[in-house]
Length: 602
Image (cartoon, rainbow, N blue to C red):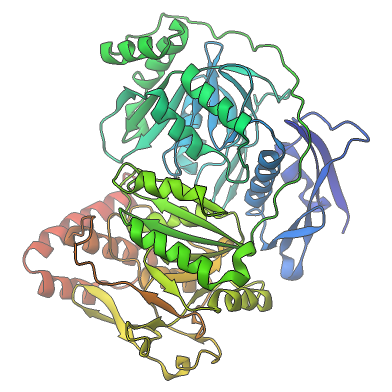
């Protein structure tokens, strides 16, 4: 099969993208607007090449980095790898942020994962703003300057259909994938990198159903937000760190809280226009927020694009991608995170150079947030990801989205893994490179003797499943075997195989059994690897710091069962008997909510 080839310049780097000729019409539009790279200059080559059973492998200069991809889902790893290369080679701070432009100035949209950055950028385009970048923006050396990188817009699956129906997207070239749309806007500037003045930084915070509100962000807090937005494949030099600090002090910023995109017309766009036209500093912006946002003058024109300024950056080498991402979600449990991470480092030294650590903090403004962030100073390959939205246990989805590796292991933040098990897991993936299965292992009891290989699917104590033992898993050297379900204190899979939790889940409960069945319905298996043993801290003498409610639990089970087409009669009978009369109101309310979801209003 013949290859097609695109050679282009992106910011400070030259790239060559090779791919099967049959995909030419589907790949070329996303990169054709970038300037061609000069002949004879060094370039990094990304090669999407055919693999077994119609799948595709992605290589970086002949080094395999993604295996067994399907088309069109392979577009996401291509864009991810381009971002990694750019971040590693740039001497400027590179942020995973979006940017748009109106009134001659850029608005930088920077926030934690799931906060709505891409959706807001798309919304602004629908309001007549110019699209500059999604998920890749460099902070230039000049005061308040940006170098946006106009790669495609890539919203998550849940919001993609909504965005494609908005004004401004009728002529957009789009590819629908299992992870969301990839959208190339017709007016994406062909002359990037271009340096643009940033008039405002917008930090979104989406809370479904919440009223819209805007509040100014002081410079010291903004520096924290920008640091968390920094690309994980970039180690900030002292000069780049100073650039980020200067940027936070120079450009005014606001926090936007909102609960629906329908709330924003006439509110957010008017405020942004007024702020950009007035050229406000931090104090003036605070006064504007306090005074409210009057309607902008009729017929306000958008300034012409500023002249392109060249960027001179010395090339560097991208850091090798780690083989395995180990992630955990936490909520005010510093001790659990600390001892889990340090145990991984102490008792699994053979994989130390092959893993990255991701900590997703679902209460970054809580008592543990700052201490968790500071762990990056002493733990290599550690990334702290703040997620302020109240998500619950389904925040584990963020671990999968944030993982830079093809292989992911997700832990509770108070789990210890038996020595040697992670190395054996990597060997298992080497022997099964095309696995689309959910992989788990036996729980080891506190006495370090008894084990539980799986959960038996039975309703008890308000949940589905109870610990059980299959003799097939008693020896750690026994072969893998199928299980119906297992506790989710530890699981692993290829990131490309992760089906995700239902976006409507809330709080705690309903994940076990649901995610197992979702893997099976996608063609995978749910396996126990007898060597993959783990110890879980169950006792919480001082109580859990988060809310656990019957409403959330019953609701999640019902939504999950409805999604998967599973019968609910036994479940509902159990909750009516176990919870009592209050269950009936929760069931009726959730049934109505599910009907609204089916009708497209949920």
